[in-house]
Length: 106
Image 1 (tube, rainbow, N blue to C red):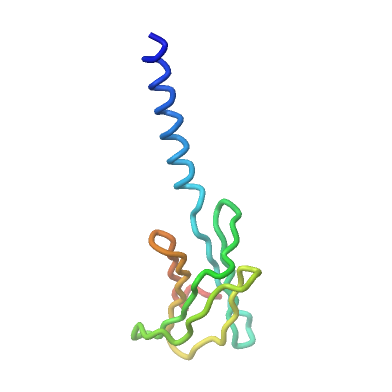
Image 2 (cartoon, rainbow, N blue to C red):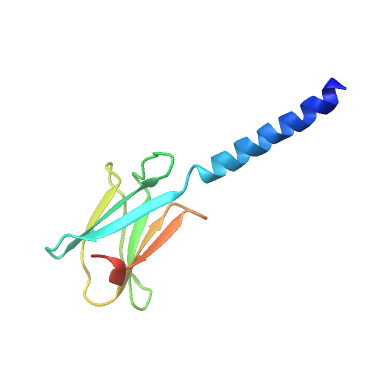
């Protein structure tokens, strides 16, 4: 009888732990126009983890990568704002990518 009660409780705990860990690591990235011809991007994760070393790249309107770099030790990336339309990709791997269009950067 006790085993029948414990098994569902254990299963609920395992499911809750799995779902909680999947949700707890959501990527975050925002980019800002510095007003001096450069753009600052800041990244991180919802659980407070650093984005230091995370790949970040800038593509032109044709999709060609024009800047390929990584977030610095402060989870920041500063780059010269390209002419024309561009896109910034914060790429921490499958399911952890954020794309920001240049039109959305103020």
